[in-house]
Image (cartoon, rainbow, N blue to C red; front, side):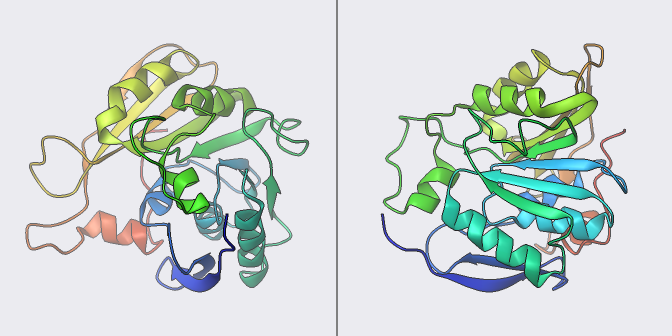
Amino acid sequence: MTDTAFEETRLLDGRVVCFQPVKGYRSAIDPILLQAAVPARVGDRVLDLGCGVGSASLCLAVRVPGADVTGLDQLSRLIDAAGRGAAANGLAGRVRFLAGDLLVPPPGAADMGFDHVMANPPFRKAGTSRPSPDAVKAAATVEGQARLADWVRAAADLAAPGGSVTVIHHGDRARELQDLMADCLGDLAILPIAAKPGDGRPGRIIIQGTKGAPTGERRLAPLVLHEPGGAYGELADAVLRGRAAIDMGR
């Protein structure tokens, strides 16, 4: 396991400072899309499960002033970088990051019922590919001891009654994710994310459920990221710049 160097990057049109690894895995747009779908309000408590360097947490805290955000990740080096980001953005008073395992959440996470839980689990199933020798990239891209079912169950357990759970994942595992969330959450809202108009197989999926809500599901019109010419579409561009949220119908 090698040391990881971090550098300052900017998100939400430069308004959010984030420290990401110089080499290896770096956050793309998924954390920004994820946090934009969370229906958080001032005073709400939000948990970012598997927060990494805190990209989603920091963006949500800037998007929703007054929200209280906790991030949990098993890699202490990422928690350190996330903490640097909180301090750099002046958010240390209401954004905190904890090192710990989602299978056995530490005090500060397990002891709270969160109004919202968000997660961006590794896309690849354990054993389907060789993990990267870079520990950060391996943890972010390939399931470890915690499988997708464990991520969903942990998120549901840590949400308060009536709280939301929002997960972004690869489109190829949409059915699996939907079934897992339907086992422990109700009123599922399913948002396909397509790279361009007419894509039959969305590259990403966001599914949001409510703890304790009646069984049911709503499939939303796809969020199309790019116009035919390749530029971001109007809504996608606004979300990525922090000027708009994603409406999941809550």
